[in-house]
Image 1 (cartoon, one colour):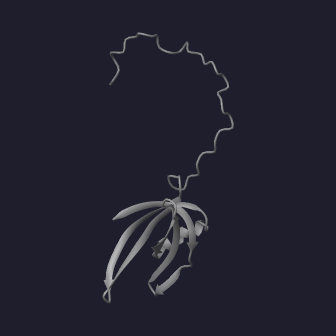
Image 2 (cartoon, rainbow, N blue to C red):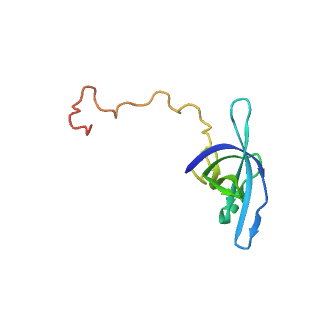
Length: 127
């Protein structure tokens, strides 16, 4: 199951080497939920531990994750397994465009001489 959530990085933990072939890194995301924001713990495993290296606590991010659950010694465990982390409001690694300094067009009265004549033949339109 794949999910996405946006929030603020509340805490980033160091990578832990769980065994010789398995590493995991946990982080906590502050997710807005009305008056009481939720602190939700995620984990990144193996090569995805490095995804957090470019972020700092306080950054707004969007996390794509899978919901994982299993039984261990009669207890039921749930993990939120992060597989993509990007800055919130972005479509990947691109930075958002800076807002234009100019608030109004330079010519408030554009030249409409190039516009098609009113009442023209619109029969050849593809829709």
